[in-house]
Every structure is written in C-alpha cells, then in structure tokens.
Image 1 (spheres, rainbow, N blue to C red):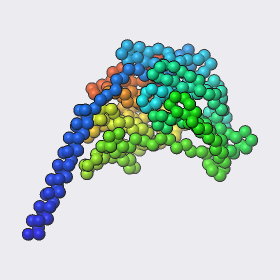
Image 2 (image 1 turned 45 degrees about the vertical axis):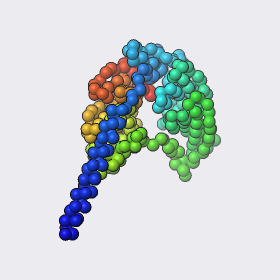
Image 3 (image 1 turned 60 degrees about the horizontal axis):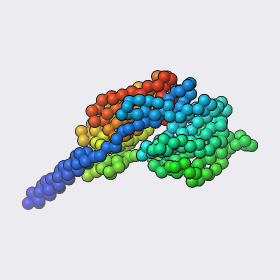
Image 4 (image 1 turned 120 degrees about the horizontal axis):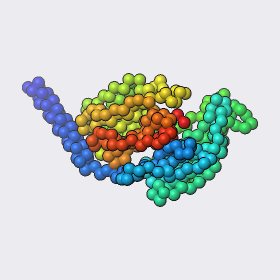
Length: 334
C-alpha cells in the first residue's frame, strides 16, 4: 500500500512538472509571437575620411552612407551610442605619443550628439591622460574615466571620473589618487553583463569552460560548450527568441597585439534550444541589436567592415565598407 502511494505521489509531481514546463514553453511562444520590433532606420559609426577616423551615417532605406562629422585636425577615438539610439558621445584627439609604454592622449575633446535632431555639441576639452575609459552606465548616464600620471610624484596615478546625463550635462566630477606601489593600478568597474533576459524568462550561467542557459520554471539547463573562451557581451534580441554572445579566447583578452585578436559571435535560439549561427575570425565583433538586425564589425584597419545580419532569415543582408576601414566604436588596429 505504501509503495502504491509513493508511486502515485511521484507520478503526480512528475505530471505537474511536465505541465509546468509545457506552460512555460507556451508562455515563451506567446512572447515571441507578440514581440514588437523597432524599425532599423540608420546607423552611426566610425570610418576613415580624408585620412582621419570620422563619424559616418548609414541610411538603411536608401542604402547610402555619408560623412556626419569630420575635422581636419581631430581623430575620432571612440563613439559610444546609448541603448535607445537617441544620444551618443564621442571622443577625439589631436595628438598621440608614447609615455611610459602607455598611449597618451593630449588635447582630447568630448562631444555629444543628439541623434534624434542630428546635432553635435562640444562638451569639454579633456585633461591629458595615459588611459581613457568611456562607457554608458545605463541609458541615461555616460561615464568617462581618465587615468593620468601625477605631475609631482611619478608613482601616483590620478583617476578622474566624470558622469554626464544623456543630454550632455555634467552630473559629477570626482578625483582619486592611487599610489601604484601600495594600491596598485586603479581598476574601473564596468556595467555588468546582461545575464538575465529583459522579460525574466531566461538567465545565463558561466561556469569554467561552459555556458548554461536556464529557463524559468524548467528544471534542466542547456549547456553550451565554449572551451577557453570568456563572455564579453550578452545581447537579448527584441524578438524574444534569440540571445547573442560575444566570446573571446581567454589567452587573447589582454593581448597587446591588438590587430591579431580573434572573437566569436554566437546566436542561440531560445525556442529551438540550440546555436543557429556563429561567426568566427579576426576582429572584436562588437555588436548592436536593432529590430530584426544583428549589426557587428569585423576585421582590422583597412580591411575592417560592418555587417548587417537578419535574425529572422539568418542571412547576411549587407556589408558597410569604407575605404580605409570602419567600425561601430572605432576602427580596430588604427
């Protein structure tokens, strides 16, 4: 009698678990069918113009590319666009030299772009530094970190952190001093990876040489083998169906030979529970997801380009190429 009761309980919970998994899968299917995709209209990126890194604008409907911003005395160092694609900051420099085996930035300038209005504004001239770390903290705040060697004590590193809102207004300006003989070189904490999907249905777990994807309400996890690779970025597609991983070999993460770095992009289908497309080869493959498109850069220097890939058809749609090279943030290798 007890054995029969135990078996009935096991079957009951097994049935409930299966019913729950079916329900969760149905919820996912509904999310995918109800997903509303934003329209891909334009793309701002960095490309060579008159021998200098400048900012270009690509019009998808017209399939045309034109120079948006260029200056005969300034090189675009980095272009950083907000997640909603409405604002951007870019950094320029007029001169580069070597100091203590580190690239030094002199006479750098910070600009803001209102992408909705297509207007550019000079925000400020930057202090000389041995390292500049720019990033969007979130959709509303942009952070700029400048590390520089102290002018009186060579073992001191001055860390200046500036935070701006999305419209170009300075919110805070903070200075810290680090004695590298005691404190080590200052570390800047970057925004965390998006390990959880916006709808909360999926989460990504990184363990040693594997990546696991866990669906809410479902017991079993899905394993993706990525031997000796580190996740650099996770992007959840607007279609609620796919997640994109940017991976880099752990041995190359801190490589000083920047024009030899290779990376991998993986598109994982959350419905089919498998990888449906991957891109390998030279370049950082920084990417952005807009509507049905995965947009990423690849290659180095004059051979660099930007690819437009359809997530719906899993096909290449177009490649943006500029004489001298181009990239989403900068031109790798230049």
